[in-house]
Length: 300
Figure (cartoon, rainbow, N blue to C red):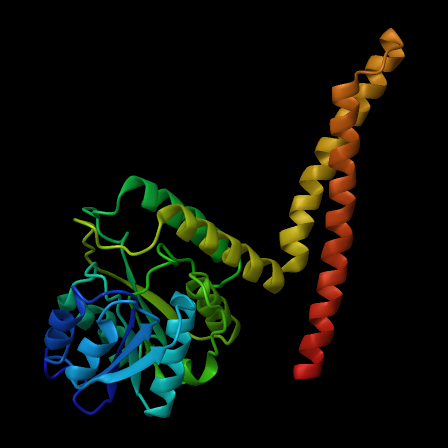
């Protein structure tokens, strides 16, 4: 794999938090592919940063842990500073296979896309645990509502970006939602996005993220960016659902009162509550759409 993109400056970026067990062997293997490696030591309390520095790679040290998104943002900025032709982001926790870097890079090198994503779901024998698979698919479905390209794995951290993507995308999210943010911004800029199959290893204790807090963080960030990008669609559909439920229960309550002369408290409260929520969502959709439109006009 040494001859991949011989005339291109390929930088491999590793966001790392307390990865002293994996970082040394990973860097040594990655140096066979590219001499340009960036490790973002995101406030690790172990020897992650020191080990990386001793292996003579570019190290960004965060004084405190600010999150996966913060590490990716730092890697993006440093890659642009180093004038990268391609940036590959690669998890430092041992889940990704180095052999798959060639597959992720190929569409970029062949100018078939601007962002190449290593998908865990394009292979039938995927080893992704069921609980992770369900969470990823839910988040991917929400993400797909805001982008032009329909993906199978919107949360994969194994990606490659060409120079155009690095220049066009300015990630800001500090948490796990940065994966969604990048895709939404790439789609908005009409950047070409593609997926390639990769293998994933979930054997042993490879993840440093609590699955519950991780999933909640990603879901909230995904909803945030989706609602900002398409406020009328996001809040409008929700408002229609609540208003429909509210109307149905209110009519049910009125019908019951007309027949028996009694008010069914629970049904009435559900009807009124759902109607109020629906109205609030309609107002939110209109206000947010107007605000975003003004901001976009000022930026153009």
